[in-house]
Image 1: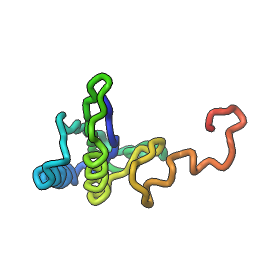
Image 2 (image 1 turned 90 degrees about the horizontal axis):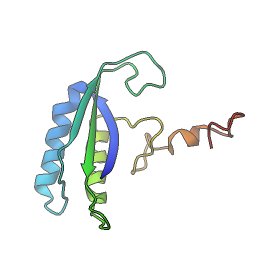
Image 3 (image 1 turned 30 degrees about the horizontal axis):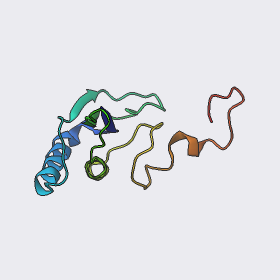
Image 4 (image 1 turned 180 degrees about the horizontal axis):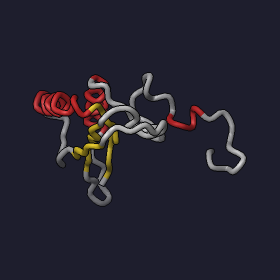
Length: 123
């Protein structure tokens, strides 16, 4: 099983994002999704590195099964998912690197670290 995304958005945008993702799939028959969208909710907090910093969030994740030894066309679906999430104000986890370039895709945390930590916790 391969998972794509791990993006989250303000919980008030959940319905909008799900309906848009559904429309993408209905309007693009070559973009295939064969597993439901995972949806989870979390309360906002005041922890600076928390993905839910200062906003109640909805985590939406798409999942594609990969049969043993087979490759499944997943890139179009993942890119469509990221576009929908970006449009709805979605944010990636700070340590994950999204597929698409943009203001939220600056190489993850590694791009923010100019040199390795003294304890070798970052690479």
